[in-house]
Length: 382
Image (cartoon, rainbow, N blue to C red):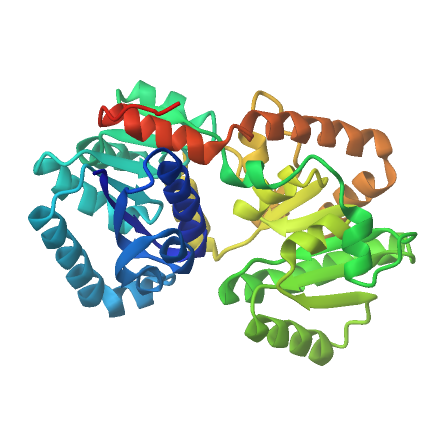
């Protein structure tokens, strides 16, 4: 019987891990899964030693406050797997938690796989030494990541991105606008200030100022903002009301993908949402601002010139980026209006996005399962 230890943190890791569990079960229906699991993993058949929401910490202050609890959980999981060794351990994302656990398990000769590469290729490259000591195999979602690991002699395999498998090549703009009760004939710009309160608080004023700038250029534009939570929706609406901003603007709770599908152009904070916008084939402009001190630290630790994920595919960098001092309404607004008004620019960006989507659409979960089977010498059944 195949026995697998698996740990995932946060919602995205839960979804990726659940798909992987189902892919493994297609080959080995009686496989047993134990670890730290979210609701989707549990539904797929994973026995939860702890709930994945226990790992969902964001701000450094929260990490420090909960550090004793997190260390206790990691010790308990480690002890469980030493007493009940799995055929393989799979850490899904959550690198700060999983890599340390993987290193300990590997020292006890348990094969270790890390699924979803941390952005070590982009910044804090010194972490690669820890990764090398922690894992037997890295499974990457993005094709350019494997080159980095090969340079450091770390076994790595590109398996594709599950989101690329889930998102079709079809354009659902009309359906999305119907769902949001948005006219089909008006130009629409989606504004995505981020999913965390600190991001929204920092970027929302800039995005709204940019929207006002665009509206002065074209009075027909409508704006959509998806709020990740009810609390953020209230915060956004309160800020708009108190600031006296007058825009043709609709705020939704959730529905970020629907909002992007309904848009002609997307303005968003850098992060994983840029990959989703690319897979939805939506022309975009990316921006981000942090404190001056944080920006200096990030620049010092960074090894790349760009932040938007679509700009790391191939040699072209199709997505305009406006960061820190360049993140002003005029710069961002002009780039948005160019995309909105220039079909040639939109089409060129979308062609690149489509090529990238095709590159990522590889049945990621099945590819990951087969790579894991190869590592532990379990045959793939036909």
